[in-house]
Amino acid sequence: METVSETQNSAIRKIPVGDLRIGMHVDRIIQTSWLRSPLVTSNFMVMSANDIRNLMDYDIENVYIDLSKSVNASDAEQESGPSPAVRAFRAFEANLDDFMVDQPVPVDLYQPCERGGFDIVIKKGLALSQDVVNILKSGGVSRLLYPWEQKPLFESYMRNIEKLKAERKLSGYSGPFVNPAAAEAHVRFMLEYRPINPIALVPNIIIGFDIFARANGVISVVFIKNSIMSNEIRAEWIEKNLNLLILKHDLAAYHDYLSNMSKTSKNPESKLAMIRESSRIIVEGLSENPRSEKLMGQTIETVQDIIHVVMENPDAFYAIMKLNNYDYYTFTHSVNVATLSIALGLSEGMKAGKELADLALGAVLHDIGKSQLEHSLINKPGTLTDDEYKNITSHVMKGYEMLRWNASISAHAMIPLLQHHEKLTGGGYPNGLSGAQIHLFGRIVAVIDVYDALTTERAYRKALKPFEALSILSKGLNDYDKRLFTMLVSLIHVQRA
Ligand SMILES: [Fe+2]
Ligand SMILES: [Fe+2]
Image (cartoon, rainbow, N blue to C red; front, side):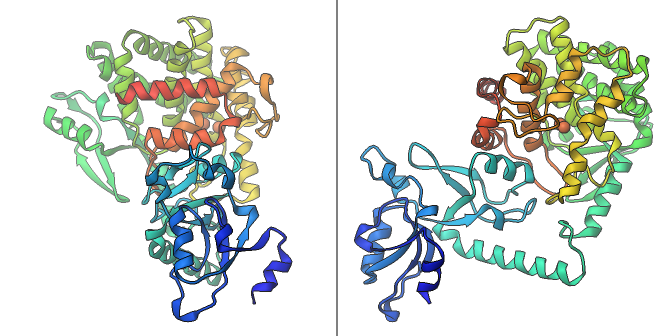
């Protein structure tokens, strides 16, 4: 039985247990005594001298190792290698492709790091999104490790996945959704509601629109229009980080409210929240009427307002970026990317002027082409088919086509839109630009774009914490500008401090 794969796979070698080293991947062991069969039988990486001793304790003499899966074997042997705690870490390997995207993973996932030891990639309970999988793959990661003691959890997770796959096949459904009805409900929800930020609400004033909250997929009314919202309620909403919503048809009323309130608001944090909210609504309007120079003018104005508040009161920026838990709407994301681009542009030494204004305008418009795509496609959970992926990538040129006829946007401000999916390694789109061919604006927006995608909560999975997102981003570092990436890390670090 054992010789079959040995002859098929040249990376498999039979070696005595005494020759095993930390970092070697054991494909199978050769059992000489069934009575003394160990718990660990196959497919694991040697993490400590203890692992080797265990095998010896069970009278195992020889094992098959897989050289193609063995990592850092020689580094790990060096004296300056991992700490005793890391040496004691015992783990199994899992293929990245075996996981189902957007489904919570019940185990902690690790990856060996270059200096010995292990980096946590995803904490248990979080889901591997397609973005995360893509970043890990672009960094050459194809396998992850989970702790030895979590093996039963991992096995039951895998059995569930197999069951789900079989059920889907039986029902003739080949798409990536686990539950098509839930996916449809999600699209309907995205069409009918818009998220709002409670920091932008002013207490003790009559509010003319209903407010809803979404928790565990259930939407309930939390405020009835034409009544007064107390300070306590507002504070509670902020404190609980609720996903607050209004009906899409109340957007105009909300926008009027924001315009009135922002004029008198003295609190920089509330003011920034109000400006960001109204900027989001204006850009959504522009997406429906991209040739409108009036709307472009308003977009330029609100972006200028954001620049001023961020410059005059950096604390407001940090406070506002902490609250980033509502759903992944294209225009919420756009304003987040613009706000972070302004902060990164300022760290980069840009002054309030044409350059920063063009960067911010381009950032807020970078995904406007997504308004031309099917709603069911944007925010679709799970893996995309090749056709769907191609369709998504078309948002860049669609956005360009929408805005090129608008005389109020400069060629410079188009760069973030055109280049935010280009990668330094040349593997991006639409033009496959590489290295120095990618403008600073393109690099800035690319790093922030993927960072925001990872840290924003979706209806079907939890968001990553800033440092989790940054640690994953660091795996695909060759695709992004390292210097800007480091700057983003320090920016987020200040934000958390
Ligand atoms: Fe995009
Ligand atoms: Fe984006």
